[in-house]
Image (cartoon, rainbow, N blue to C red; front, side):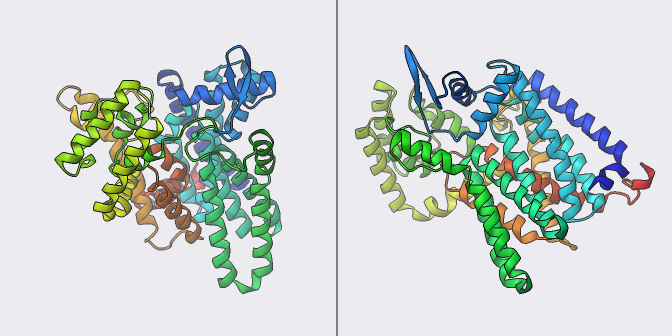
Length: 463
């Protein structure tokens, strides 16, 4: 690995400088501090000041919470301790460092998947990727999650290919998986993909069964070990077994509108409806005319839905009786069109998460395709980002079918398929949920770029 970076040191230096410059533009021109950022930040401050993992409470001690795993609040707490409370620009700059390190991890991962030349192309594509770069300017777990995923697969390839460092690499793999899980509960999908891969390897490589079983147990134990104190803390505090975080990020004393969420899944297909409807309820007035036509199956259902929204507007809250009506409405819709609910809508949500322009952290209209006449340039910017995103994903898919194929392709495809299928079950199709896949997407797409480039473009000895 050291020789790989040393032989092309000037190219890697140039790429790193470009990566830093691009990310600094996002940090200082397009910072994106959201409500979720302040939730994480409040937990971090209370953890530092009171030793309580919870939310501020007027006139008293913080109230304990379990709605977020401790990975990102712990990261913020460390940044606040070193650079000052709520110094989110410093947080972004630390995330910038992690993201540039991710570019190097992607480069070496691609080298191990293919060869050194592909590794260089992967590094350059990672450095200029606008979709990972713009999340550096958003104090949210995404940048660290992308870093963790790159680390998982990088250490996995080292473990499979370097016998003298096998157990150290498997240990690192488990630590990266643990980090991913502590940042977001869906980080556990990594553990599932690795487990499936090792199970297949157990059958196909019988001469290494002992080592494969030992590696799987090592990764499993290391990955889940950090969750033990978290689960114990939740049991001691809430008398509930909760090793991760609640599905809908709600505390014990909060009402979770499961019926409303069920109803949303019967029509939700795109991110704009997440912004227009899902994020607004409860707590804000909502324009019912923003519901897409597929939210109604007939005039009677349209009238009933509008009546439910009229009830909601009286208190801008969802209470149990209203939630029960949404639940009944959802059941009726599912009974009428089960194929739409179980197949069509999940596929549409998956497509939206993968192929949307990823402008949610930028000052661009989410309905960019409707505004060409009024705001041509911003719509053109969004369309350009959509094309760039499509190119990354399409080339990655092509790379899976070209020969020579990437080594250990099964574990890559297993993770991408499992994660994509999981995302289809969510009612809120947010493009950031596919961002964690981008280290693999970049590595795969780089192999196709490499085939198209002149052979001497990245010749080591000429750099």
